[in-house]
Figure 1 (cartoon, rainbow, N blue to C red):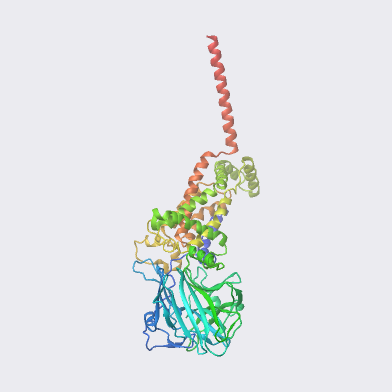
Figure 2 (tube, helix red, strand yellow; figure 1 turned 90 degrees about the horizontal axis):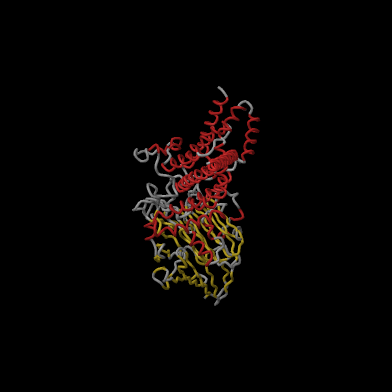
Length: 625
């Protein structure tokens, strides 16, 4: 086997290894957006509220483990909630938020898809609750999950109608709680304690978000515990929390007397999913101890994880004295503009970091804000397609900003293309001496004023934009379920068509076979691959044969790599290639090498001299006549 054939097979092997390696390992670093069902919070145990398996909940109560959501909601007294974007109810036993539904978001793209249920009663599978209680210094509850609250005023909790609840402890402390809607997804709880007993009581307010049963981690972004304590963002997936070695200083279990957690002034704690978040926000001037805890499920118990804070300094309430404490509860969709507004209005540090913009936050968030601004501008004319159109506008903006650099790069590449005949001569002349060929090539580049790497810089500058846009497509609600003209109904998911399905003509699912699934690329990735191949054809081939062969396989490799990414990214890169081809064609027609410029100048001088001689001859002939 000669060296060229060996190099060809090596190039093919490297290309195949890259395709399969990227599909296998890239999700761990820059995870692709495979089409998967979103995590559903609601899990129906399939049994009624009576009979069946019973377990002990976090509050010591024996509850039915498989109670349906409907049965749980019918079991006790409740107050209806309607903020316009949230509906549900407040459980008067414990004054617990355990029933909230997002009215603007559906679970799937189907027309009859139910709205997303965010919070669930504790005694259902996947219970998800928020509570604000008071503990005594002995670790017991002054008011807690077993407390039955009385409705003093208000029939329903809405923007215009707050509700007032009250409860009295055995020690004679009366707690009067006012709950109001502070924003679309924000509630304010104000507790006023008045001591009617005869003995002083030392208490501390505690806020807790509980999630029951095991929660599946999202492989594409951080889901789980989230907080900003001491102005530092902290995030841990559920699987990481289950490990005792994970940030033990953040573990906190006030009811057991454990003195862990992070002491901070202000801040917030909660749980985050890809698109939704639940958080507790204490008064920002107060000092609290905050963190998380995990209770493993044992015989007769349920596993649950808590995100919580407790006031670091207990308060002693004397008879006839009163104490007032306020806290806020966020439960809703992670809409960036709302999170920004809440951060400013209520002075909540880094509240927008609930959206996981990743470590390139300084680039990703401005990119998102630009996309959102363009989307808002286009929405009156483009409607539901505004976000997809904004991606194309973003492509034009990026190409315009980078045009000066790309102009130099395109001119360099155009000159490289005109040098192909001379480069071919050098390759034939030094076919057996690679070192001499390299030196001859460098001499040619220097003589012609060509930089062979001139086209790399614009590509390197576009790569951070690509990664940032990938993150925007992955975690922002604006991209979720955003359509694009044609067959695309969700720009945040991969192209739903498949080559092996003949783009929907064959009713089978090749995704169930891992190696076959890699070949099942959609229409947009194929269009991208063709655009990359066309752009490559307009660029000069590398002088090294081995590099040229690898270069030839790059469109194929990237077609398969991008096939699993959000289709919005594929559209961005395809439009980018098309614009690049147009720019490169125009600039190529305008660009000449030094040799061509010298030849053109010599031709112009010769033509000028010929014209001058012709003029003299004509003048002489006229004089002779």
